[in-house]
Image 1 (tube, one colour):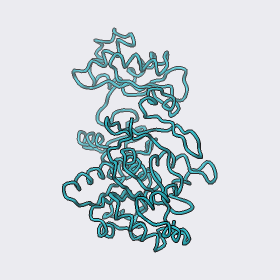
Image 2: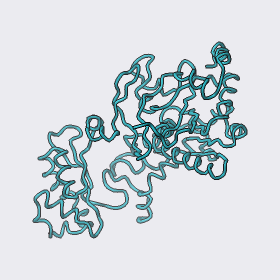
Image 3: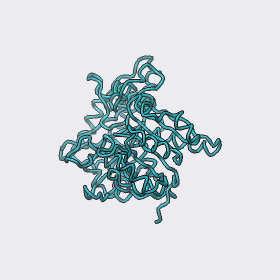
Image 4: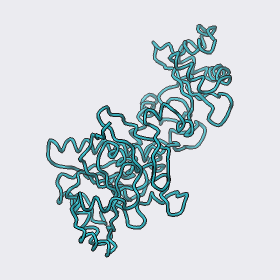
Length: 406
């Protein structure tokens, strides 16, 4: 199938680092945009060296978050480097950054400056907190966003301390929100002819992710509590992980049945585990009564799941229309044949690291086909992009090299 991306022709200048910004630009690249990482000569963006397992080689974290991008080097602390970026802005559609507060402005790449050069530019920023609020100057990473957005307050056991989620949901969530906002701004530009400024904060995104907990607060009039594996909105049983054989660290199946009055999921579950004798038991006939006797519910289910593997339990329950899933580890997912066929798990050949198995694009479009490519080497596309896209002559590039600008 010929490569055809939904965002073919869109040029993105990528001043992002680590995760939140790189998730945004990687999403745009997977949709077909030409995403150009602007990186410091010699070292590149900080994510290349973060948690590095081998000296002088890009970290796996960088390789997972920067597929399908191009890389050019430019020293923006030099006047010639700054001028070079401003010239690139003339031909760009999108400019994205997630530096610490104030950095991009000190470099001279604030929105008003770029807008004066290209009124159609979509200028996107990802920060920890709102740029006009009391915490505007505060640095932030993923867990900071989770704490400030309320996620940690509802994560963990009810009698334990706040915890952050295992996945970097503030970083990646902000990245995806920003990608959505950029797409909206690009569409609006087709009507107005003008670009605009986009701002996404990790705090805002985490508040958005926690809507169900707000429902709990509306019901009770109190702050939403930590509820472990339970649902934040209301008590449900079963709603837990249940042990499976052979009993390794992730040998569990998560099972949930709906509280909806017309649901037959609980009844189907009882039939699957061979406890039809409990169908009329008053302890279990309503969602409220099941929650009151949730310890007994968990005991009944555990006695059944513990005799099966997590895959066997998931298969039987799913076929009986009972919501259930094996708790899959990163290794389980990496080896899942269906996820490989679907393109969610891909093998990428990197020129230095070799064959890498990693997550692919979670967005599937029927008419946008963009194969997953390896993350770029530092400055890999200097010659091609500076000459072909931005129309610099060899003489100009030689001078910039001599001055250490690129």
